[in-house]
Image (tube, rainbow, N blue to C red; front, side, top):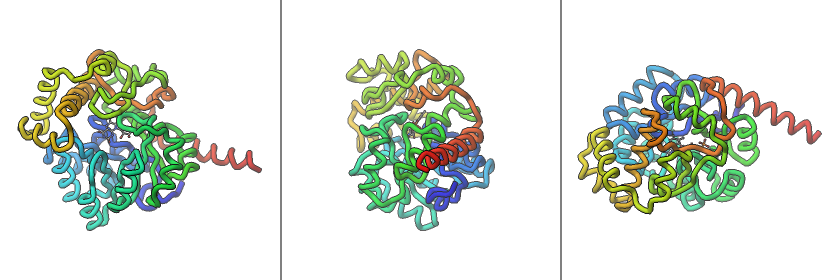
Length: 344
Ligand SMILES: Cc1cc2nc3c(=O)[nH]c(=O)nc-3n(C[C@H](O)[C@H](O)[C@H](O)COP(=O)(O)O)c2cc1C
């Protein structure tokens, strides 16, 4: 299947791995790229040196194009972006922050930049800044989709900007890919689907919990990591949605963990964080990030917090990334042919 996404990014299929903190590690990235999609590393858990090593590890596992996600609201993101640019990573995806300097630097070496957006203001800004694609993320998505669902958001976004669009939020199979193409996108980005694959490092306890979850078993709240986002309805997530402020003791202990993981002094983490977030927002971010680490690495069903899309209600198997991509493409082609046949 050829679209602007495959042609401009040099990949075989119009499918990409979403940039998931703790999940999008080199093995998963390479598995998606080797299967003909676009793998994407999320370096939020790495120091700049760790990011460089992870990028090189991806390169040792695949010779196909791949991306690095820079979630600008996370500590260390500017430094990680600089490393990605120095390493001339073929594709960079930026989210939750202004990325003009990344776009300019990536274009100098021929890199492409994908800007994640959820609303008109961000879409226009990203287009003006020169992003090559917009990843337009609907409310169904895991984590920070906006207020509008993909069925309405994608055609709307087509009227806001001319930049080609990649659809995210609610896509897990070929029917979804066919729908995204029909709604004006050039391909899809999938988070929840790739998190539930054999190559994903997500703890098995949470994979099993996601298989049991119905589409209704998610919570959309700004109380979990301080920004409106979608999470699996776990005990910890439900407690957090009832609290107006994150526990200061927990926030401090998680901030210490992040400070030592990223090798950034606690005071610096705090001062830098205040440039984009309130104290309350920073506390929620620290607790939410800690909950995610606990879910992915420890599989603690009581304390873990996991971003999850509504598609968890559709997914109940654990394929390889290659199976996901092959089956999605085959099903999309079948669905598109069947739709044509109906018209005839
Ligand atoms: C476990 C997990 C972690 C995520 N972490 C991030 C992140 O650090 N930055 C980000 O921009 N999006 C993050 N996301 C959201 C994805 O990038 C993507 O927008 C979303 O998964 C798409 O919706 P879907 O799950 O319906 O495919 C995360 C999603 C999951 C499932």
